[in-house]
Image (cartoon, helix red, strand yellow):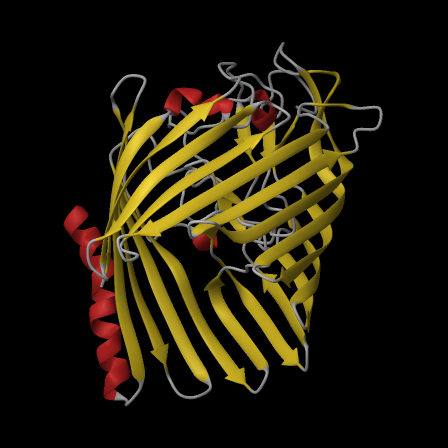
Length: 439
């Protein structure tokens, strides 16, 4: 099985460029290989052992047309696993899905560019946010949550099938996208290291409560389509953007049974609209970023008088939600790069009682220092919530052995109460080592 998966991933990379080059086109072939192993500190067990191969072809067909294809082959034998597929649309499910291995299309696009206009068709991601990892206006894409936030790229996006139109004129850029793909997120499977434990992420159902849950059909491609637009204006020392998005939320709500208590509850991702703006501003050596978003119809679980499985009493309704984020990048003394971010996420509960705090205040700090002629980098990250008093500290050391080969060692130190966003995973504190090869 592993041999078949490997050749399924590599053979398109081997064959496609020959056809392209034979026609006089310019094709660039790449392969990224990453292997990461983590040891849980609480019991010294291996909590993560994953090998990822990302073969890619970037083909410049002519001056106007360009194609890109990237596959994702993952092999894992660990407590984190490969993640659940129940919230994927049929169109985005893996080509091959085995117990410990999976092959899927990570990107497949055909782009046309002429003057200031570009049209991109295919499986792609849409990046509209400016803050790093704190999702304020960056809520167009489906998100991979199987490793919580403990990944280098945050948020970790899942590509979907759609079309994107971009147009530049003067100091304005207009960007619109329509995705006919109902994929919303990927979570860890039950029993995995980062399967949600906090009640707030389980629609109000406590961990350990056995509840028959039915997942909403993800085959409603048109009804669950995502579409949006962004307009960006450039000025002397920055940019300002205005964003509108409509589509299914990436955060699920639990819909209680409509008849008897023995009927399964429904895990659903109702539609919501987002209206937001972002500002990037450079003042000397400091770059400031400000984002704001308002969701007038955020689906959320609240406490009610409807009994659910002899446990909490829940209902699901729409409430206004406002998110504000502020960030700054700067170079501190000693050539230390700093990134600081703060966000407030508020839901207007009205007369309702939410299964989460009305306001979450989230902060993050990243400091990194290069040395040994930039071949080594020491990084220290912190992310946490003032609301719950929990968080994670992530120290790591990265070493570029060659231009193509990197070795990194680090840790994820999680703390806080078990009902906190981070504290729910505090028993998953770990140390890890990673090898990355780019060919």
